[in-house]
Length: 66
Image (tube, rainbow, N blue to C red):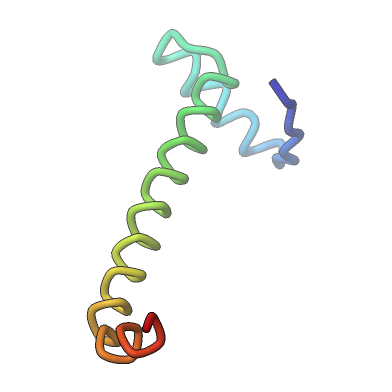
């Protein structure tokens, strides 16, 4: 596994630590979950945009594919 260093302000670090403490998790677990959720959401958003563009330009893409 590759490590990633994310700079946080003191306030952000404290807030993350408080949330971790309140939920019984580690700050690292919370950060990893947040990154995974963001990636999942962006993957869906980009996929929807690609599908929308493919539908909008289907005739052109069909001609180019010949």
